[in-house]
Image (tube, rainbow, N blue to C red; front, side):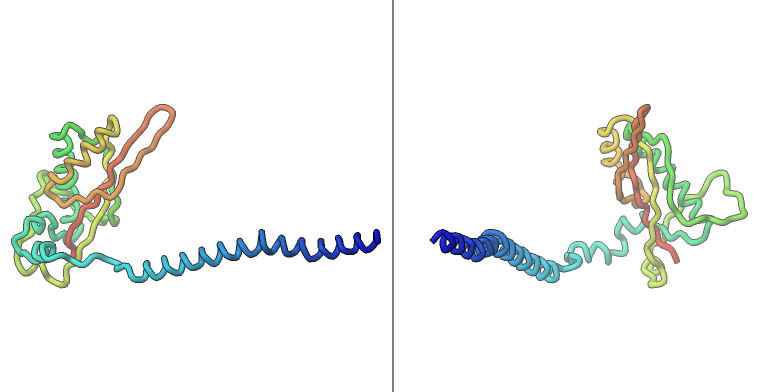
Length: 201
């Protein structure tokens, strides 16, 4: 009788323990995994159905097609290293003038543009570069390009955002693309990253 009871307990343990493991461990995990896979499938389908870009509205399209739109004079045609250097001087000067008038002048600037190779001396006063409006502005041979200018704004973070709010006043088309902070034990520096858009042949 004693051995029969032990055998019965052993049989119950051999049958019951795997059943408990399956019922309390494996099956719930599989159920949660399947629910997660179903959610992933739904999310993937929703992502595929989401348009990659927002189509232009009627107002946006008319603004882009307007040959007299003010933004056209803010994207000059820059052809050659001489024109690039002149445009660079204009952008830096007007940006600093705008920031100075806003009470948040930059204490330093640096840029990322293709290397300029030239063997000439710039004039003492660089001419104003403004594009001519007309068919040449819309030529299919021209393409939009951009270069990044980083301006260091002293003071507090409030000064940085105050400078950011004044960027639209700069005549060359400046697009804010980033903010950067760096800190050491001695000081904290903050930078405003701007992209200037131009037309190139």
